[in-house]
Amino acid sequence: MLNVQRRNLGNVSLLNLDGNVLIGETESLREIMQTLPPASGVILDLSHVTLVDAHGLGMLLQMREQAQARGMQLELVNVGNHLREVFRMTHLDSVFPIRSGVDFFPQAAPACRTRVAA
Image 1 (cartoon, rainbow, N blue to C red):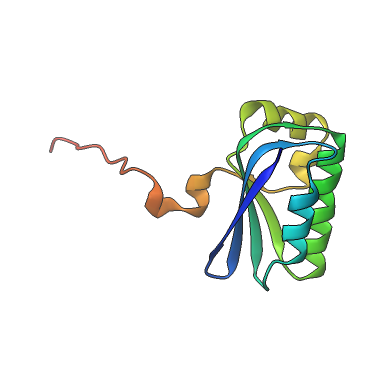
Image 2 (cartoon, helix red, strand yellow; image 1 turned 30 degrees about the horizontal axis):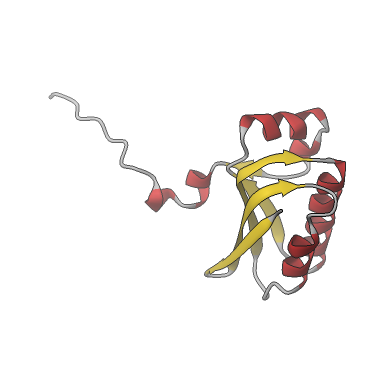
C-alpha cells in the first residue's frame, strides 16, 4: 500500500511517499494531487519508494501535467539508485527534475566544513 503524507513548506507542497507506486495503489496519490493548495511547486520525496511500475510512471506523468496546468513545477527528490536507473532507461530523467533532498533543504544538511591549518 502506498502512503502519502503532505506538508506545506511555504509555497511548496512536499509529498512524502512510502510504499510502491504500482497499479491499484495510486488512488491516494491522485486524490492528494487534486486537492493541493495553490503553490509554486510540488516535491515528491521518493526516499521510501523502491518500486514503480508502468502504471506508476504514467501516474507521475499525469501529476506533472496537472501541476503544469496549475502553474506549478513537479520535482523528484531522494530517488534511490534502482529508481534512478528506471528513470534513465525510460528517458524520464529528462522529463522530471531529479534532485537530492539537500538541494532543497540545505539548512538540514550536516555541516561539512573542514578545518584547514594556516
